[in-house]
Length: 423
Image 1 (cartoon, one colour):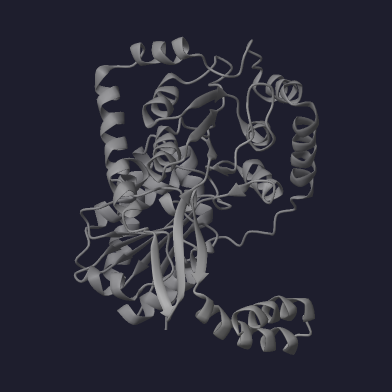
Image 2: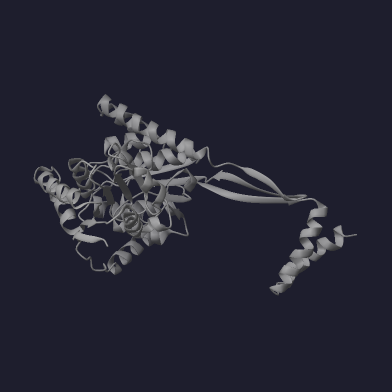
């Protein structure tokens, strides 16, 4: 029977009525007024009203000169890892055709969408990695036109490293605008910006609500909330490493979900002591301490089997396994966004450099979806063709099937083929 050594504070259900209303108003103004609507909200929220929200080629070229060469090389390294893994994923998505009955041919084609919009948030931290994840991936998938948007940095304009990251990733158009108005502009277009087919990327609750309201007019990736981590650890784990990984996610947001799922009281106690020690000197403790205090949990499981059950119920965005036999959990856990197996990998690798995509399901959405990958930017469409002999055989059954449902015109379309091919 699992024991809670520390429980997260219960969170009252947030009333999002005001958020929904604000988002609806912003979207409607941008939809009907275009750039004027974007400019209104950009001035209001970001104090940013440039002659053009779109960055020109020279502006983009100048950005690289502002960055240390070591940063440029690191950005390019990270993007190469993401590109390589995305290409390996893409290679598993194939056109195919089978003959299911003599003369009946069914097939599928993998077709990239024509355009996508990548939202790269600013806020507390400049999210360079979000540019890698949301621009490199659609380009690997074969998307013709990738639009990228990011908010200005503290009223001073675009953050140079973010802009360079978007450009190096292959963005075809780059705009310095943020928040709901940026998403609405990508969805509905404005002067000089044609609408896209899909918008992706993380953000705050306003961004999440905007994606919810825009869905249908455009596709979306998923509705993401604050980041989450669950670490399964036994006595083989290093408490210092486990504590560092938990706090690594705690600095994201005061509303993070953080859990140590311990297989012994020893690792639970030693990790807690180490966590409290590290928290005292953590550079971002103002955020991380609140996150751990309010959203942190320590659960003691009696067995690996029970740990799997608890983990799957928790359905974490990030699942770390630091146990003697991590493959047991890789083979048996089902609900997670991405798994980090063994002490040698940490969530930070997935967030920034190792190559898997960091846009992942939160709020237990891992029960029914995975994260962003090249497959989100392609459509699997089907086709069929048949010989006359095969069509006759299918038509006779299909006519009866249509008539069972009283869809008589459907049945007549089948009968027409019976009459023609049956002569």
